[in-house]
Each structure stands twice: as C-alpha cells, then as structure tokens.
Image 1 (cartoon, rainbow, N blue to C red):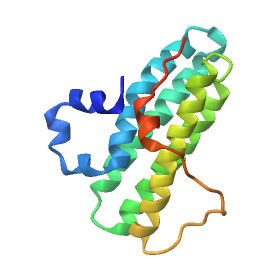
Image 2 (spheres, rainbow, N blue to C red):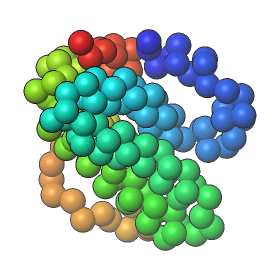
Image 3 (tube, helix red, strand yellow):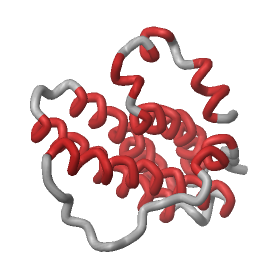
Length: 157
C-alpha cells in the first residue's frame, strides 16, 4: 500500500475536516494504519507483546494529539499538544528500534525514517505556534526523499 492509495481509502468524513489539510496529521493516520500490521507481527512473540502494545499506543497518540492541538484556540495551547505529539513520535521511534529483532530490517529502517519525518514536521510547527524557538540541539531531522518513503512501505515478514 502506498500513501496515495491509502489516502483514497480515507473516508470523506475525515478528508472533509480542515484538520486533514495538515500533512503531519495525514502522516500520523497513515503511520497508525501501518503500525497496526507491525504491532500484529510483534504480538506473535510472547517476549515482544508488551512492545507491540506500547508501539501501537504511541503511534496512535501522535494523530490524537495533533487533532487535539488543532482544536485549541491559542497558539500556546496548540503548541502544547503538538509537543505531546512530538513526544509520541519519538517514543514510537524508540519502540520500533526495540522491535527490530522481530520486524525485518527494511521495515524498521522505513519506520524510523518515517517517524523522523513526522518529528521534523512537528519541530517546524511548534515554534510557529508558540511564537518562539524550540529547545533542540543541532541534530538534523531530515529524510532524503519523503515521497519515496511514503510510497515504499515494506511490510513485516
């Protein structure tokens, strides 16, 4: 499934909401759908069932917090929820890394890059909403080719 084919399947009730115009929200919903399969693969091993639960909760929290933030009336309130989404994206990336022994290398590499793209977008949005700079080191949050990343979604074994 590619990002474009996935977008065509999203119900009109979601696409008609102005929130849908936020690319980070679209990516977070796509990530939730993709992580569903990843969590299923992780649940097959008794040792990684807790990782599966944490992963799916963390990925789902990204979009939920973006949606909550979007609904807030002031930039400061929106920024707070976007920061929660940022924390969930980082947590998701951490859980994917911990699941690397069960998920294929290609899957983990893709998901880590995908979460990094969401982080990059949030690091752009948050200071705009807050009206100031975000406290981040000079680490680069970039992915080489975002469109390729969205259209090349490997599935777990």
